[in-house]
Image: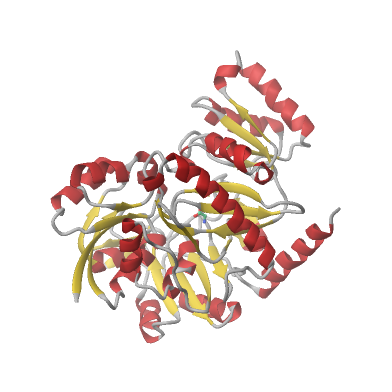
Length: 469
Ligand code: GLY
């Protein structure tokens, strides 16, 4: 069997899933070299070499690659921070090892303003009404405040506040979720405005889908749609999170969308891809266009585009990929990936998280993860299930840390379980069964990810929206 060395830059479950897919290869003996945020128990166990780089800074990642240069054939990157900071450019320049992720120049999420302006030029219907506030255009804070309030007046306060860059200020804030009045909204706005431009855009009503596609720089290979669960609590209540779970139906189309909706998504993403390709062909490798769509009463709107796989959404795809992921990666590097095949199966991902995860606002002071440091997590039963039902269930540690022989939860999403089944309900039950087998650490999960009730509500919502004149 051919031996292949792969560098994986890892943040959470998304990368655990990538590593799992590599080591399950039937065509290659894959040795993984992992640059990790912490001692993730799955990664430590399965890596040929494992290094902890808590902030995933690209200089230290590059040193790790240089030290193992003769063993690594290519690298693949999950999290956005090293991508936006230019990990591909640096590693390829210093070592010649090909990296599967966009170049710094092609990382579309590095500027939300540029993203909106690009869409305005090529597919304006996908932009909600928006305005860019650039600090250079305002002489004082009170002048900026007047301009923001004037925008709110004309949009009935239905506002989403987004800093231009992913790291500036407090991040995305939504009227009704993060602030209840204009003062709060403006404080949030200022926290980013002091560093650079801020976009305010209209909050759009609809149902979300996540569109992902592999890309070799020349061709885009769309993957089936998935539905993410962003809010912390059941019934889509509570603060936004990185994603509490996600589902995928047996085919490409989500149950509340139509084939036409899906075709329109593909058309839009192709249009964006063609525009970007014209600027920097080879730069777009990996999953350069993860697009969060909102399906509304009229055209689908784009909430955001990222240049990396979705977490949890890529976990709905990898466990049912029929192709060998190593071959897919070689094709991406060579620029000749034309298609991939998936099993005809539904998948449901559900995360277990610490008690206080998602409580950014301090609005739920009783949700404190007191057990975090003191109670270890026991994954034995869940991992046992994944071995017994090899094709049906996967357990993917995320923000878990191996200390000695014990595993503890840190602050973020702790561990996810993917259920695979002949329909969404079977996949969901399997995912929940895996979660129940994880003990300790005061972890909890949403109970309504991919539930019939939730999916029916999405269907009804789309029916009502489609009826609107
Ligand atoms: N689940 C949302 C994201 O990956 O951005």
